Length: 325
Image 1 (cartoon, one colour):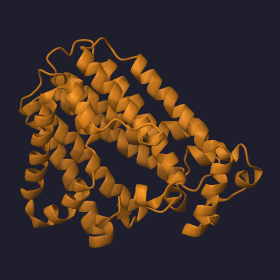
Image 2 (cartoon, one colour):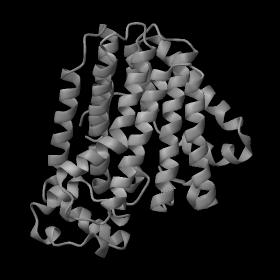
Image 3 (cartoon, helix red, strand yellow):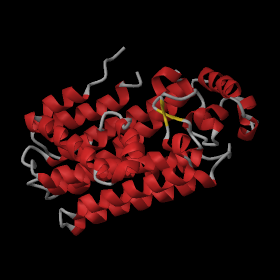
Image 4 (cartoon, helix red, strand yellow):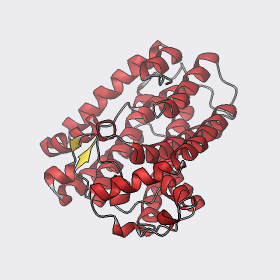
């Protein structure tokens, strides 16, 4: 089994400035939480703490290159992470999710109203952070990503429980809900970089592809589990009505799954049984293959970059794939 490149490996490849900037990002996130009252600190803090490996802020830093070390790049990275955290809170509200990476969600611990307000505040703080950079182009990039997130959520709700969703519609949803924020992270980094000419769109395209592969593989992991790795029950997407690529592909291979009404799956045990049947069709391997192809395309289309910066970006892309190996 391949060993996934770690965040530390990416930081080492990118240069020592990135480690220092990641520390400053954590300090700024803590300050944002503490600066808006005990309620935000209590509820948003747990979501930010459960935010994983800070992949999106890391992309901001690596896309910027070694010369972007000022407050502007920190604010851009913090803004992206705050938007990501806000979407997690809002997604948990819509799904009535009890756990997020093994921890109680805000909606589970504080209720729908407080969770919704917490997500809204995180969104507003993201744009307040970025506004201090004084760059309308950066505000536009994050605003476009925020609009895409909302459109993707609406698309997902429209498709809820619909077993006939085609692959292209699913991919469109993933582009909007996940890939566009990865794209924004890379574009913001490029805009903060010293030599952004001709690289903003290209680095954005890299981020978009990596984000798309990330979502495909996250959906594979929902089917393959186990719960101790994902922090939620196997088949959680199916239980909340989200039809993803593994089921779409499996329905083309298994007549019984093709006839399945997703609404009939009501318990974790029933979802587990459907996941096992999906896995038996080989659909997970096909979904992984598609994600690998997207990552390979992302790496192949990277623009001309200094060696350490390219290596760090390629390590991020490889890590997205290999953590699911």
